[in-house]
Length: 44
Image 1: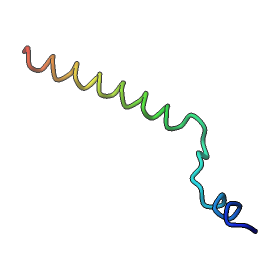
Image 2: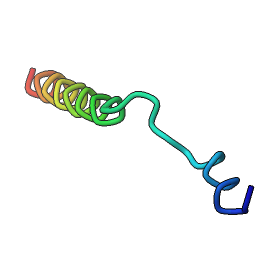
Image 3: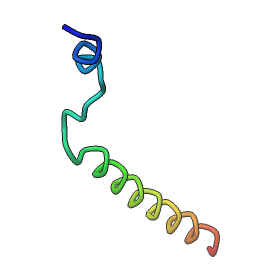
C-alpha cells in the first residue's frame, strides 16, 4: 500500500452528514432565545 492510500485511512470524515450544520442551527436558536430572555429581564 503506498503512502497516499495509507494516509486516506486516517483522514477525518463526517459519520453523520448534516449533523454539524444541525448543531450550529440549534446553537443559533438557543443564543437567540437567551438574548431575548436577557433583554426581557433588563427591561423589567
